[in-house]
Amino acid sequence: MASFKYALRDTARLIFRHWGLSVLTLITAASVLYILGFTALFSLNVRHVVSRIEGGLVVQVYMKKDEKPGVVLEAVKENPTVRSVRAISPEEALDRLRAKLGNQARAVTLIGENPLPWSVEIQVHRVEHITPLVRDLVVFPAVEEVIYSGRLVERLSAISRASSTVSGGILIMAVVISAMVIFNTIRIAIYSRKEEIEVMLLIGATRTYISLPFVFQGMFLGAGGALLAAAGLWGTYSSAVNAVRSALAFLDIIEGGHILYRFFLLLFATGATMGWMCSWLAVNRFTSRAMRPR
Amino acid sequence: MDIRLAGVTKVFEPDIVALEDVYLSIDQGEFVYLVGTTGSGKTTLLRLISREYLPTRGQITVGDVNLRKIGRNRLSFYRRDVGVVFQDYKLLPNLTVFENVAFVLEAMGIPSRIVQNRANEVIDQVGLWRRRFLKPPQLSGGEQQRVAIARAMANSPSVFLADEPTGNLDVRTSEEIMRLLLSINAAGTTVLVATHDQYLVDAYRQRLVELHNGRLKRDEKRGRYFFDGEL
Ligand SMILES: Nc1ncnc2c1ncn2[C@@H]1O[C@H](COP(=O)(O)OP(=O)(O)O)[C@@H](O)[C@H]1O
Ligand SMILES: [Mg+2]
Image (cartoon, rainbow over all chains, first blue to last red):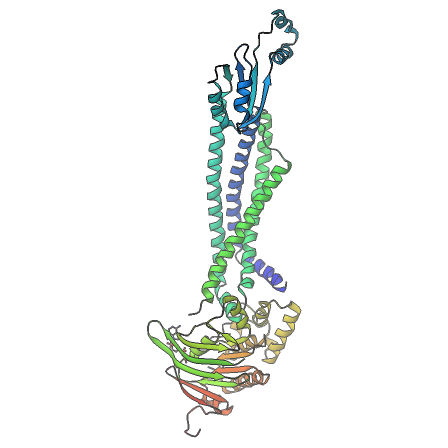
């Protein structure tokens, strides 16, 4: 426990001795994590919007006159991409039509006989499940036609895929860059205390004791950078939310709530972990070399 | 702790033989001078004992520790039990005398109140009480030497190694340091002093081991600096 206290004191010394470098590292880590967070939030929102639209995506299968939907129900029953299936009788379809038409509904009744066919409403889990499903269903002779929003479907899945790829790429780049920056800062800090560390090792200080201040420094830089990034993101994101809400009200983006809290927590943990690992690697490399007998 | 060297040879790349086939046995609580001209291998021998070096051939055991087999974590704990006064002191120039001594103890996870007491105690013992807030560059050679001794004895090690602790010091200061080393030895610590200080060796006679070109030349109970023929 005593070592912990000394380590904290030394961490403060390290940070202040190289305060210019510390600030620079903090800013770099913050900027990179900000970009990372921004991309991640963007991609999260695209996924969110797409999944909302997916939820409303329905494939409607109209049967030929006097055909029952049994074959279609049978065909999709075992299909794992299908979320829900509902057969709609001509009576129910007529009721719906009436409800839609309101006071003009009488015109429909005037025809006398119900002209509407059986139909089936199918919801799938993901956008990309629609096209193969439609392809399977149009071949049934009992099926008159299959209606779905084809263009929109393809666009959406393309956007969703692209945004995942891009944000994945940016994620990797951001992690690599900030890891390198933190690693390098810690290495400079270690070299500035090279003699001190060598003497400490000769005198019997454990590697853990020697690592602690540097590891704390790394975590401070990583976690501090993440906090700054989170603050910046919070600002940008809330104004983005307001702008979207007034201009594109139909877009249902993520607001407040625990998704965002969890996201910021994750960002913070990412920063701290990265700082911890980089500094640990840097010190460990140095002390292992210094302790090797000649 | 006792120190045993068996057939120890140290060759530096490519072909500098610093020590050759040295057998040496030092018991717990002994005081031993290690003498010899510059380049005879004194520092190399001490560094083998502190495991900065590994022997090219041969075995070294200190207490029950075989230095060839010791792992990194155990090495740290081993070194706490072996106090070393380095030839170049290795003091940290931007820490005060007090901090130079205290940080060794801190590194061992000792609570700060005990660190304070112990650091003050050894600083007082080496006679630097009034200099405890100065930094090494502000001190004379003899004072720096004494800080190095204070640091090495702070943890009450079982083995004390000093590499030319009186090099470049005047006679009076050398005698003070010698008395310090003897008092450390009197407390039961094994002390090994590399030196070529003829005056001290002859004034305070102790077991004397002489190296010559890396070979053990002499090992006498109460030897004189220059071999006088009567054992
Ligand atoms: N790290 C080293 N690399 C190469 N040669 C060394 C090294 N250390 C010592 N030597 C050589 O080993 C010999 C013994 O040196 P040393 O043990 O320092 O002698 P002493 O301390 O008795 O003056 C010398 O010839 C010296 O040049
Ligand atoms: Mg020497």
